[in-house]
Image (cartoon, rainbow, N blue to C red):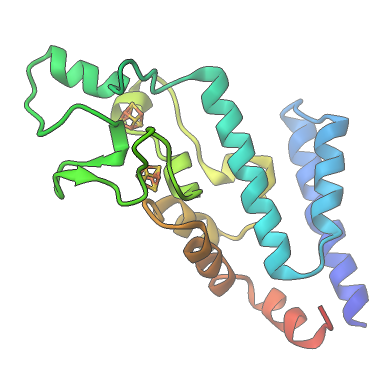
Length: 189
Ligand code: SF4
Ligand code: SF4
């Protein structure tokens, strides 16, 4: 009975996602393979972990390809604009990883300029300056999360900046749909 319900839920999510990809002419064999891999993970925590990693890879590729922040000598596009227009800041370095209010780099920021945690909220973050250029990343517009995560989970992640992955995964699990919670209780996974 529980297995049937899980299968039904998985098929529903899979079909909706494929329909979404087809509608946007973005369907590929590779994406179908990845979606099948996700729906075959029945353990909820492992499934969310897999989706989280897939979303990180997706966003890393997007930022690598499109390079919206366009860092030069550790100064991002927005900070260059502020500097060129004499808009005073404590520091113009390290983009969003520097906090104007705390007057320091984020605690996860490493001296080599990289991040020591995989914060999905930060990877999704687009400042107003870049939004004006047309950049925007919302989980509701990404096939990996559109139907695999609910509204509360998506909103939570989008606001969960400067947080470690483990904490975000806990937040995602806490906000999972009631039906998933029930299936978790009654299934053996
Ligand atoms: S999102 Fe904006 S503020 Fe943040 S690093 Fe990119 S250009 Fe800079
Ligand atoms: S958690 Fe976010 S703000 Fe902090 S170092 Fe990583 S990317 Fe930068």
